[in-house]
Length: 123
Length: 180
Image (cartoon, rainbow over all chains, first blue to last red; front, top):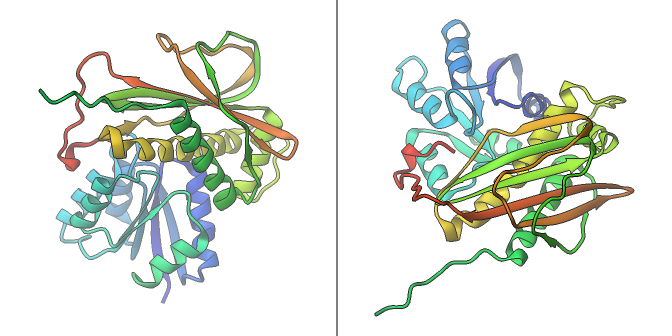
């Protein structure tokens, strides 16, 4: 069954790379939506249902932690797995994201295999 | 009375952090080799006319600093091509975005390196500049560590400064309050 995905990152380059990695990882992709910050992501989710979210942490307007907090507080999206993909490497941030309900965490720079390995345990 | 422990950030620390972070980014994301020269301490960046791409990423917290990454237009196109697996023959939006992201990853990993000893630090969103005949200057910064990185015939300069904040500036220790 095809999986619709939302990629949230303020860098268009990273959004393109993650899309490519999902294809390489042979994820059965449906639609791939993109958003450049948490606000835009929440807006997208009002009209698009997705089965997986990949999100950065450091973003303008609404960062990944606030986005994750709001997402997990909404029963409609609570069960959607979120993989954090970010430069943010502090242990406190990692623990916080996981405590909020992130399904996993990958630190930039990353390899396609690292993303694939994390997704295997999530989808 | 217990002596006050002063944690210092040395030139060698910065050199090691930059070299390690840059090599990891280039080898993992770009599949490009990278060699670092020994670092140079510069007490100011002399204004000089520059042609090419500059990316700036700020570090804030109880210590504050700036990462200043510069390279030629050609190298910026090479970096973007390697990152996005597309050929570029001019500096366009994709190229600027790619250089900004590479700077974000390098300085972000340098920040993580120093957080272990300096406490929580935040990172600004990168700013990228492209043009001909321009100068850049950071007000109030005296000591910069320059690490020149080579990939084939191309070079990238990473200048980094890190100093205690002038005024007490504490990022909240509750992680949920951090903005980084």
